[in-house]
Length: 132
Length: 259
Picture 1 (cartoon, rainbow over the protein chains, first blue to last red):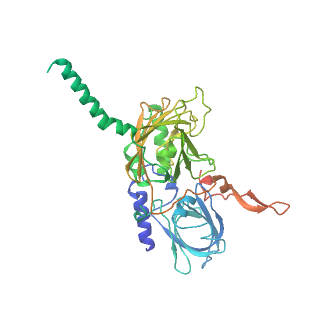
Picture 2 (picture 1 turned 135 degrees about the horizontal axis):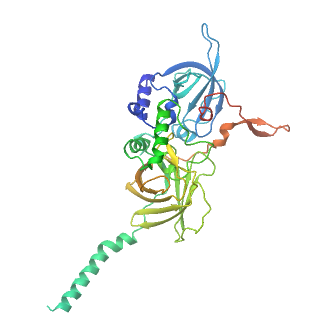
Picture 3 (picture 1 turned 45 degrees about the vertical axis):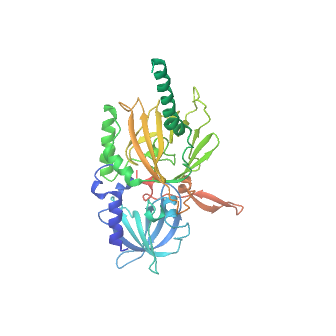
């Protein structure tokens, strides 16, 4: 699934058309301007209510490396989506797809991770219909 | 046929009908509700849109402010300090699963997110204590009405939110009473019909429903993910023992720092 499709699915799931109303605390993130960046995992905080990954963004022309914090769903949701605590480890390099913080701080809500071997990691609050 | 015979026949017919239809229903084995149940989050969002609690007028400015803050990207944190959702919010807004266990005299719900998330629903006929110790999930007693589990809950902390989302809700402010009618609408679809009476914040009892799914083809489990670990990192003490040490929080990026 491409990132665009994944992002679209995310927006459908979270009801982007209704974001003007109270839904959930993800409103701190700008779901209308999804971003991607390459970086290296610095730390993993596998805890509730939300997991966080600290990532050092790759340096690029005119811009030094910088530390970003990505929030993502809960241990229960990621576990049921096939992740383990070791799926992303410190030192792993990947491309991170995220909804950026609206206040422009270096952080975002993580939607998808693409590993160097092309494997894509995502998650869903709801297990697939096939599991019913 | 005289009246006495007619009355006897009618009484016999009535007794037969009762026997045919009512007694088997009353004596039927309750459905098996045990297993891991995952909330239908899309339905939660539909409920948030279409069924707001009857807030007292004095609460409406607070609700409007929370919605405005949410829209501005500064969501109010209904869930903070790693406290459990509490009742009724656990049933209303959690995105995480719970496991329902059935044991003699008791039904237990175990939740995710923190280490002490459980609801004990006593099925042994006891009454509520006259003066229960207040807790986040309250004191619950239950009984079966046919295939419906009826749960009555009191003794909830006044600080426990009646939340319509993770960013909008009001503490129940005391004297809350919750009645749930929990039943299967399909073999693996659980519906919880809640009636929440909260005289200090609502103008009338609020009726709402939530849906949970069981996934028999997969052995999903509830997972440990201790909330307090968000503030801790693995480290070592002076003796080289593995311990948790404080996790220095950045200026942004976690739910703790978005305030």
